[in-house]
Amino acid sequence: MPRSMHRNIVPADGPDQPQRRFRCEIPVRWSDQDVNGHVNNARVVTLMEEARLLWLNRRAASAGVESFSHPKFVVALNVDFLKPISYGPALELCLAISRIGTSSFTVSYEASQDTHTVFRASTVLVVIDRSSGRPRALHAEEIAYLTGYTTLDHEANNIGETND
Image 1 (spheres, rainbow, N blue to C red):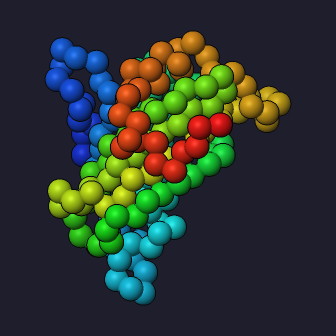
Image 2 (cartoon, rainbow, N blue to C red):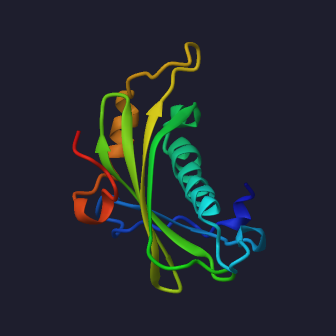
Image 3 (tube, rainbow, N blue to C red):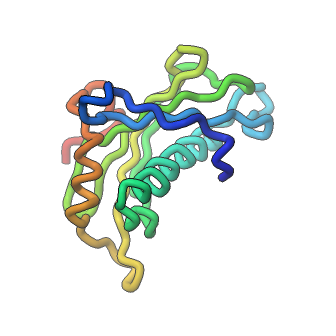
């Protein structure tokens, strides 16, 4: 994805405080629309993926955690659509970590367009060992990276998540 398609990453907290969320802007493309004139629900998942890859592949690699560019598998996905997304203004996405497990973690999303929250979502990702193709434990540096984005705001960030 061309870097010019995204605005710079904006830390949610001030420079003296730890980051708690990853923010980026993802453009809405004409082709994202459906016959009803708003962004198709399946395309919303693609926009979420673009933000997640920007965060966990590019941003993590620039922070020295290159292993997040290795395979990850989405094992759960929940999206609460709050308002139709239209072609035009870019989506402002805010991502955080709401849970870190042994081999998986939960990414929580909140997206806005024109200052209106349009969806909240969560994905549970499992990291995969390249050689075996099986789940593997998170590495210490991966846990440290994710911990820097962990939020305690469970009401807003655990959309559709169960406590099992």
